[in-house]
Image (cartoon, rainbow, N blue to C red):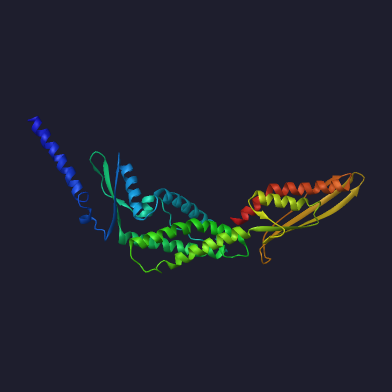
Length: 328
């Protein structure tokens, strides 16, 4: 009797397993016709591995790599956080829609897995539904990109321009990929995502322009043995900026003022200085100034040298910190 019961139970599970397979495994086209669905099977030792394999296989439909998508999503989400902090005038830019996973990016859903010698699962995408999702994400991103490109294309000030273009780049890269995928999912007119195509070109042009023209020319009035000019140049170059007397596109004007006091103890210098960064068309966009404590020495030249060494030290400790704070 036990043998018959075990046989019946065994046949029951076989039939159930076959029934699970019958709805899509044996005839996908009848359940998920290609006209309305994109599908891909995945296999693995467990459900997670099967889903990963299904995502890899569905990415083949779009001729893209899941690893590339994962990296693009990471860059996109970093840019989404950054652009939310970027302010133009008094208006913060609207944060773009965050994509949290590869499955979210593809708009994939999964069937309940079935089990044979391995776990088998079907990834599926509803063409109409995911096209609407892509279209909305693309439109949201286009609005963000329009605000960013306004800053990036202010070619008189590539300091702000490069930051806006660098924030825009990963957003435009993923948006362009979504537009490409949307075109594969649904047959739309060639110019349906023309604004995305235009923004791709403009962001790349702006980024290249800003990289090429982000060069400072430094001018210092009342410098001592070129100490301040050298200090400012070193600070900027250490921060990744280029400095050139011949090809400077942006200007740094610095000026030192000093009062000299002479008495029996020696010669004392009270120095103050101001640094102003100007756009290509001569507008001020950052200023920095300090009044320094007096420095002295028996020798006038050494008194000046000590005063300017103090200015160098102050610049090294706080100039880039204040400059970077201005950019946020």
